[in-house]
Length: 219
Length: 219
DNA sequence: AAACAAAAATAAACAGTGTTCAGTATATTT
DNA sequence: AAATATACTGAACACTGTTTATTTTTGTTT
Image (cartoon, rainbow over all chains, first blue to last red; front, side, top):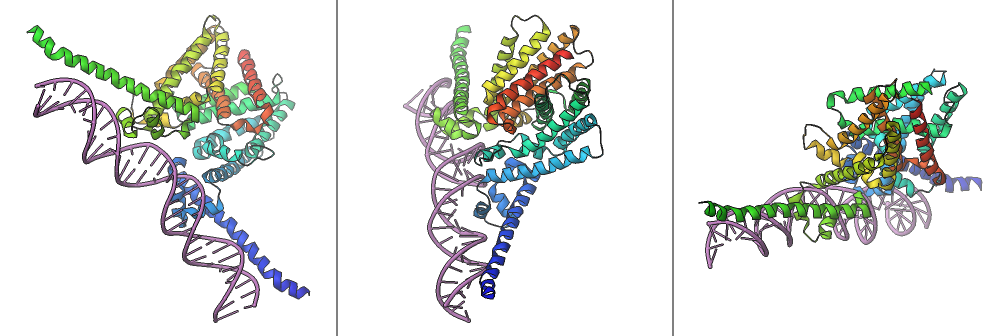
């Protein structure tokens, strides 16, 4: 009885598992190709056909693994958050004082935006990933953003315990700190620092951030 | 001699002037149609063909008045700046104290972004208008942004004269103030306040801005 | 090994996009 | 009335995201 059961079901079970694994692998193959093309040519300059060509499949095949282009953008947005989170985490290593960690985190945020403007764009500026969120209906609208912000909130709470930010309420200050960093970075990423001549943009950017750090330390 | 000169040239001069005027009028007609469609359906959802249809001309005609779609976006970006400048100017009317004017300006900035997210987007977030700037090569890269920022810088200089911001250098603080406002507004416009549940987004936004005002007053 | 069933991949089409250009219609000048 | 200059457009080009009917491949059963 048992051996017959095994004979009938085990082989097909093994195949099913392999197929599922292969399905995930092909999904990753598509994402990797998309990722590379987007970094090479920019998000606006890559079509589904380009991605299909890169992996040597027909365009229609992409739609067996992704509902639409927005879903691809969303998947890459999630991947960008993974890398972003890693960069922020690394910046905190071995630093005990929460205020020092806050400054380090700001610096890591800034450097990530400058060194990976495409990732920054898809995480915090582009419409596409959030449009896909619209069609997902989760318990939390935007878990990727939420988790990252959770860390900032807990960090500011620690700073408060160390006597900082006595006159400001935490969740509002958290949003304000994020806003300031995002404002500076998104102005740069979307080319709005062109109010300054080319030579002085970098200095303005850095000095504005220095001013921010200085202000934070007085609060 | 004189009358012959007049006969030969005045009619053709009159026609030339009328034609120039009509050319500008048609340009405006196109921009107005584009403007209306963009506000109705959003920037991503309007094609050149849609604009042509709205003014009852063929798509090719649009290209007699605009080099490409980016130029239309740029023209509307400039128009948005006109309205934005007007709103900021109005907010300052009848207020003598520069610090009060600064706060009022921040409020006007915020309200403009909330009430006209499309305008805010094309001024400060979209790529298209800046891509057109690339192909323009002016003395100043981005005069619209520059002029608006000039006012903020002069306002902060006045605040300094009144004893505020003693420990911060002006042009860096200006960029920082702009960044903070832009960060808050662009997070909202591009749907990144979804780290908060729908019910509390507005409160978070307002309270973060309140915190910012409070901090500015202590500097 | 052959027949059958299930899964995966695709060719082709649909309905659009921005943009260009040869040719037509209109207006103005001679 | 003929010639010229200006304004406009139909049609095409080379794309885009996406869907569907069909074919190919893979796995299972007789």
